[in-house]
Structures are given as structure tokens and as C-alpha cells.
Amino acid sequence: MLGFELQQRFGSSAAFISAGGYHHHIGLNTWESAGGSPPPPGNTGLYHLAILYPTRATLADGLRRLIAAGIELDGASDHGVSEALYLRDPDNNGVELYWDRPPEKWPRNPAGELAMFTRALDLGALLKEAPRV
Image 1 (cartoon, rainbow, N blue to C red):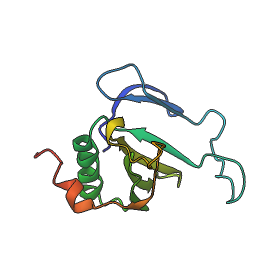
Image 2 (tube, helix red, strand yellow; image 1 turned 30 degrees about the vertical axis):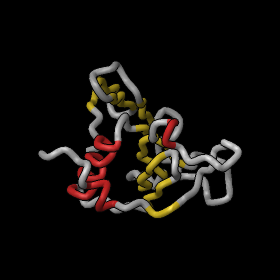
Image 3 (cartoon, rainbow, N blue to C red; image 1 turned 120 degrees about the horizontal axis):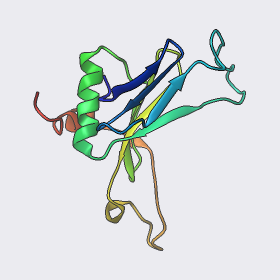
């Protein structure tokens, strides 16, 4: 649904997925966690996994796929340097899908220092960037 392709599976305990035919960008397994539960809030553990999309158009296509699959977003933010979509995987882990603006477009203060922010992302404008299918 996010555009990754299954490259290899090891029984029911591991799968390796990638974009563009690489042997794997992400390895998923249950070798240490089968039957486990996520840590309670306020404890150590995975906060979220972030997946970098190469362009705004590919992120827009990811959003189109999420909507088509009926997957709800936890949020969507413009950070000045990037635009991000936030959701939960089936195990309730946080997932961030984002793209980085070119560095020359990053917001800076008068001293030239990075001036990131968090604002609501205009999902309608983002969807207009999605390739037609």
C-alpha cells in the first residue's frame, strides 16, 4: 500500500521489503517479539518509524494510497524543512511518511540559522501533486 515490494520472506517470522527492487530497505521480523506487547506510554521503545519519500509528488501518491485504503492519519504537518504524514501501523507503532524540501528552501531566521516550525499541512494541496492513476 505504501509502494514497497516484498523481496523475500523467511516463513512467517520475517519479511524484507524495498522500493525499486533493492534487496531490502526494511526488514520486518518477530524473532524477539512474537506475542509481545508495545511498551506503555512514558517508557522506552520505538516512538515512530520515518520513511523518506524522494519528492512531494511521491508523498502525495502515498497519501492517495492511504485514503484509498481507508487508513486514518494521526496528523499531518508542515515543518518548513519537510512535510509529514503521521499514522499507525497494525501493531500501533507510529509511522511518519515525509519528504524534505530542498535545503535552499528551508526557513531561516535573520542570522541564517534554521527556523523549523510545525504547522498544519494542507492535504488538499498535497493531493493535487499526486500522479494520476
